[in-house]
Length: 110
Ligand SMILES: [Zn+2]
Image (cartoon, rainbow, N blue to C red; front, side):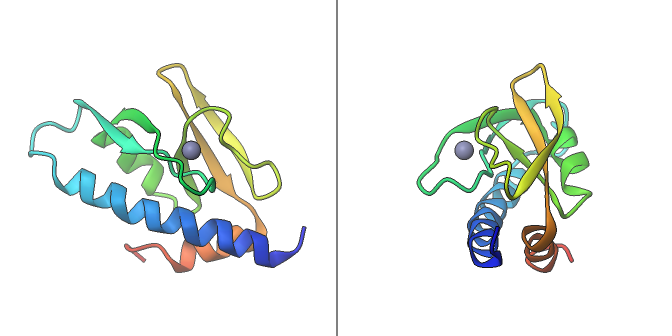
């Protein structure tokens, strides 16, 4: 697995993460436990599917800069590994190697 593809995939996902940060900021205080439609943060170009989770759940994922939320089946085994499968309809992946480094460096909260 050469690093260029990993970096490109991670950059795309970092862009979508910015979108999701905006979605999160658009929520009212006190609605942390209300399901919200976040964008799938996978590496597929043009993926515009939504995953439903609460702001509180999204915050837990975002606490780790290498973790992303995806529609089940959208993971790319060569750049990420599934760390959790939620029965409510989304999965959490962790970026590997160079993709993980890009994810950390592009973290808007870093
Ligand atoms: Zn996707």
